Image 1 (cartoon, rainbow, N blue to C red):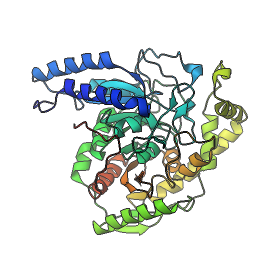
Image 2 (image 1 turned 45 degrees about the vertical axis):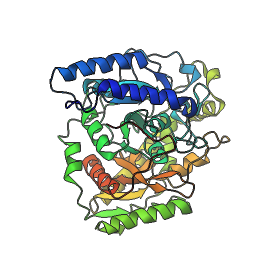
Image 3 (image 1 turned 30 degrees about the vertical axis):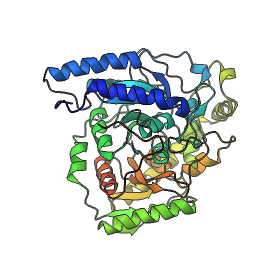
Image 4 (image 1 turned 60 degrees about the vertical axis):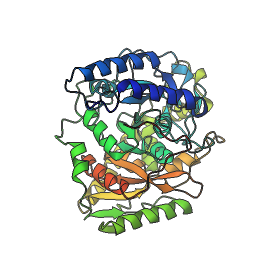
Amino acid sequence: MASGRRSPVDLVEESLQRIADLDRALNACTVVFADEARAAALAAERTVAKSVELGRLHGVPVVVKDEIWIAGAPSTLGSRALADFVPAEDAVAVERLRRAGAIVIAKTANPEYLWSDDCTRSELYGVTRNPWNPDRSPGASSGGSAAAVAAGMAPLAIGSDAGGSIRKPASRCGIAGLKPTYGLIPYAPAHGLWSSLGVVGPMARTVRDLALALSVLAGPDPRDALCLPHLGLDYPAAVEAGFDPRRVAWSLDLGIARVNQSVREVFGRAIGLLEGDGWNLEEAAPYLPDPLPIAVKLWLGELGPAPARIDLVEPSMRERFREAATISAHELYQAQRERRQYARHWEEFFCDYDVLVTPTVPVGTPSADPAPSTQSSIESSSFADPANLTGGPAVTVPMGLDDEGMPLGLQFMGPRFSDDRCLAAAARFETLVEPRTPVCGPKLTV
């Protein structure tokens, strides 16, 4: 931007044109801020002409998940019951993106109340589709954000993750995604779902872009009492410094996942690439009980009360609210106790290893609009839940295509506060894999 090789005005126009060309087919965006984005781009270009110091994301188009608050724009949780809710303030993450010079061009779809069968669909916004194959899902719940980045509508997106909702869509759309250490990025102001599990995080086409975004988004804010103090970490510098692969564990299934044959084969090739790159690998994992029962109790217990117009909520989500109403305080307390024990053993594992490598998802990509079922989301949670229950970071990066030509991700997990290490490991792997683009492949270059 500073050199003039790229123009904020041109970038924003390219993004808006990409949305105009593709979103009728993909349905990734819920609101497009065309006029506001063009005005911001003009202002950004004038700032460049003044030769002043630019923000780290100056002029970069960004899309933001529907759930995340933007002042004056609907934040509906994908529900007709909240169709008229318009927050009066930005979430801290959005505020920081703007302060760094980013230009928010659109909001993106999520399933109703972020609860899904691994598909991004709702009665309010319809079905969101995968740029690699529009008959397939982009994953959930940050599916709109993942589809937008994969299709080249923006180079950066912000999603949220309380059970894999950044990583699973990133994997299914062939992009990179970061579930950061819990509390590293303030989540407030927000709807308040899953307050002990959920995080805000970036999604992009490269790990280096994730690190750049994290450098802008991380840090405390008084509006979020659960966020962490400054850790003093330079995430882009950590990625550039590289990763020392001396203590790396890997696991195909964590002892609990049902991994299909195609994922097994692609993961095996990825491990072979790491071996060829000189990584010191050991097959190992915490091998703890399946965390899903704990996670389900917490998801239900932290869902919150049903909206006043429950008749506007989709039938499957109404059932979730009924289940949530049956969770007692004692059950929630017990789930948190079990969670603490799980997290303790998980953290102890990383006394011997720097990162743990797994597939991001154990199964292929579901249909964009399958018959109602919870099976696909349960299967896909196997590799996602540990990072949410323990609060540790997890990065997904593309590792190849399955036997149906759909992308799959490789996940790098670590103990709390090791975001820099996980990003560096993922970035090193990223250099070993041939980049691929979907049918609606990206044209933006930043």
